[in-house]
Amino acid sequence: MESINKFNTISLEEVNGTVKLPKKKSFWRYLLAYSGPGALVAVGYMDPGNWITDLKGGASFGYLLLSVVLVSSCIAMILQYMSAKLGIVTQMDLAQATRNFTGKKLSFVLWIIIELALMATDVAEVIGGAIAFNLLFGLPLLAGIIIEAADVFLLLALMNMGFRKVEAIVVCLILVIMAVFAYEVILSQPHLGALFGGFVPQKEVLHPHQLSLALGILGAIVMPHSLYLHSSIVQTRQYKRDDEESIAEALKYATWDSNIQLTIALVVNCLLLILGASMFFGKGAGINSFTAIYHALGNPQITGSIASPILGTLFALALLASGQNSTITGTLTGQIAMEGFIQLKVPIFWRRIITRLITVIPVVIIALIFGAKESVLDNLLVNSQIFLSLALPFSMIPLVLITSSKKIMGRFVNKPIIIILGSVFAILLTVLNVQLILSII
Image (tube, rainbow, N blue to C red; front, side):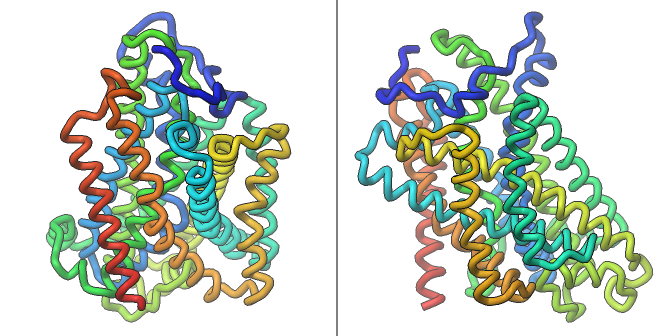
């Protein structure tokens, strides 16, 4: 297909088109070759922000909000499908496409919003990682924040090893997280009847307190930055950009990859909420922070006969793995947004340093002003997830509009059912956000 990128820029140029495809075609070989971008995207759906909202949701309301996790994950699969399609078909990421088809002023406003969303995302990542360092090694929280802020150098080192290496490391960390929580949920022996009943939506979800946490879960699961990231990294494969059949094939395998990884993210989020419900609901344990959860897992008065310091250590290790995973994807997205929206071109090293500093400095400032106290950081973390829900429509609406344009997408334009679902999701989320703001006021 003929390129429609009027700025003639390449998304993540240093890794774009660097992953080779097998010469011998078979479903499993090609699925393996295309697998990886979905894992990086799924990281955003199971970062520390998800943890605190899911665990708090389970501890506060039992299995009630499992329906929100399920619906949010279904929304995510449709949005990420559109995101992957945008990148593969147009050879632009969402930031480039938005800049390409809107004015300079609107693009700048949207860039500010996504930067704020990235700051909110980094709040969860940095705080989660800092608390994990504190729990595992006794490091002060401020020291942990600084370490997390500096781990952009880890990304720079990994990128020099090749993009497939980055993907492999992320997949390994995801498997560690899932294994830890599967083990802890099995030990907690959840009530299966109530568990499966939680997947059925209930009107109680719309009550003010439940709605606030439900939108926090939605904002934590459906991450705005994942839409930008996915539309870029699906272009790392060496499919033929000018051949529609090759494009269709790339989209097919990218969709398989995305849906498989997002299903894993759904399982992880369900495990987190189930753990909160089965271990802490109705026990007055005051599960409002990672540290409280860490200590509760080893307290027989709360978790009964399964209480063990080992459970707390496993929890902290998984938290650290989640924070490191999210750091990789957050920094990449910052680069994508900066290059796509405002066309800022600086050397790769400084570009990643700048994008990391833009998102991390506010966390450090808040910690210095209010003190690196966990109560302050935990409140900041939960509120950051609600902000992500408020920011999501500003990424979702351009994505739906662009991928629904036959002039832009050609034969790959969204089918009517996708257009309807995408539009309904965007409208529903906007209405719920307005209701939340009014309830706060």
